[in-house]
Length: 179
Image 1 (cartoon, helix red, strand yellow):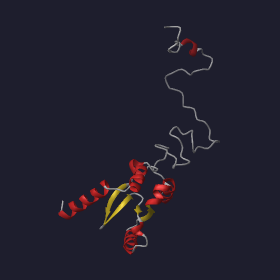
Image 2 (cartoon, rainbow, N blue to C red; image 1 turned 90 degrees about the vertical axis):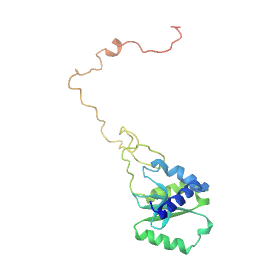
Image 3 (cartoon, rainbow, N blue to C red; image 1 turned 180 degrees about the vertical axis):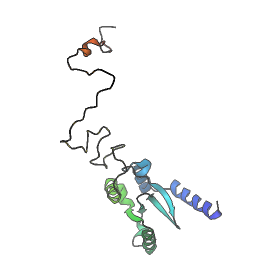
Image 4 (cartoon, helix red, strand yellow; image 1 turned 120 degrees about the horizontal axis):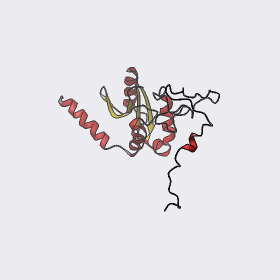
């Protein structure tokens, strides 16, 4: 690793260790693929810049800014350079993240492409209209036919009145009579 790379790595490490409260709040909600299954990383190097949060697959960068970034020419040039690479940059104020994180997450969610999760795994409040893992919960059509599994090839068919339920042993339990 070249000295420049090790300096950059140390710089990004310091940024991760000294994150602001707003960064910590947003990172808690983005990490571990918590937002619709998209992987976000923090303090990602892109060229000579370091993005606060980045979803590489969606080419989405999220910047959390304090008041020092208001109408900043450096930030405009940076955003233009990142846009030339195909990245989309969303900027949020620290106060906005702290006062209404759900609005910030909704904005980020709307900037992402359709979710990579297709069956509801890890479903949270932000993923709406996704079918449940068994396929009969949220997101399914109420008019969809209910499918029954095919019969087992080596077992006889089961009838409702075959008396099997009564032939089985009684359910185990902790009744007061057997103590």
